[in-house]
Length: 408
Image (cartoon, rainbow, N blue to C red):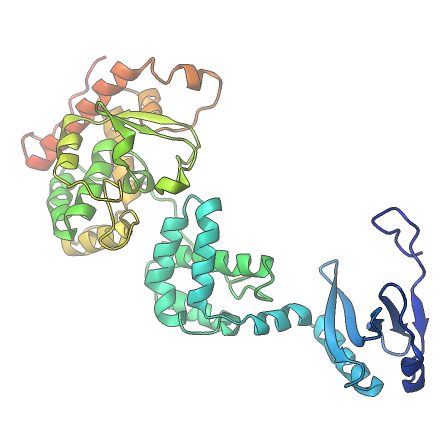
């Protein structure tokens, strides 16, 4: 039984016939366009327009959705050729392909660089981690794929890029960045397939890296070797314990009377991605952190840590940490490990896990989160100053390295 129409009216039974050249010529236009299905070749239909125009269509189902492939003008393509072309399309469908999407992709063929640029504009509105994805794309994908037609990139190309990245976690991140671009393109019907699909990620182990007391002065000194902006950003991750992406996007208008007030929701016009848990967070900036921020000049972008070029915030902190670890000859550490080191210092100084969760903006849930935001302001200030003092003492060598718990 034919499906009812969207307006509720009863659907007309499909017109079917074993088409012949003479029958095609005799088809007359009607007030609305209509189809006549060929009973000889499955999926082939001729569409007759009210103007009298006639066109061959191959109609099939792909992932449960009807798809229409334009075969050509019935005045230019005969019935026999239309049947052959439709048979070829149906064979492609049987092999898991989508001929209509592939043709659309070929018509709107663009380079991977153009495709990734379009995706970034989309991701800025939907994905708070778009900046990291954009960096990985620019650093690892564009040099090899930038000038290639996006539709021509195959699974072998994806595997080749992953094989050239030694760090397993980084390779997984690059794969995820590429897959996000291709998945969006498939959803928008720009590309027929995602070449990253079903490619196995590298196996990784859970990381619990925390800088030791002896490592902190070595890392602190090396931060100066990666540039003023990047090095100061890494120092503030260690001093403040906030997420690297939030530190990188720190804005001067969010700093008021020594407090850093982070909006929970994204602010696209300012380039602020929002906090990870979407909760507004108010953090005291200890004296050491304020001093480092004061050393940076005010730029036109409003970012405390602007990128060297353009109007973006700083990026490439992961690469800076890899370079530092290589230079020091130590186990790999990431910007997030600096945040973990800060959290461990909070508990080592005797402030407890609750204080760590408040300072680092871990989502605990419950209506008390909103009301407690300012209740612990003074305690949080003491925590931040104590932790910063401890880290600076280690960094400058003004301590014997022993952790002395502080009683509240």
